[in-house]
Amino acid sequence: MTEKLDFENALKELERLVKLLEEDELPLEEALKTFENGISLSRYCAKCLDDAEKRIQQLSRDEDGEPMLKAWGGDSEDL
Image (cartoon, rainbow, N blue to C red; front, side, top):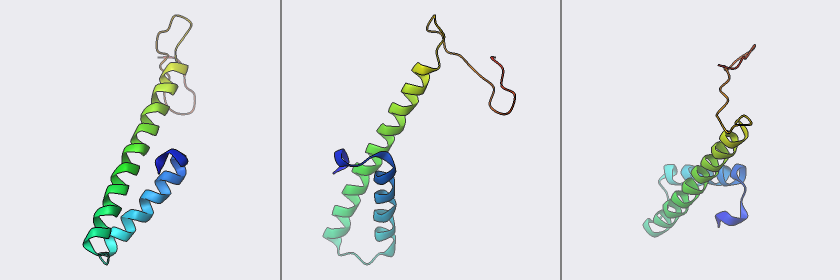
């Protein structure tokens, strides 16, 4: 299921499943299946975020491979 979704659509689907579960109107088996799908989507979203963080860290290195730290905000200078 998750291999066909990008992060944003996976997150929207996860939110939809959470709302279904919160309504507390699903039969037990359907609720369990919905929960399993939600866990799968949650893990997929977490992996997407981890991968994005790794890419950002890699792109935020100087020519020597050292991390470049910048202040967060308006006038950011290297720390």
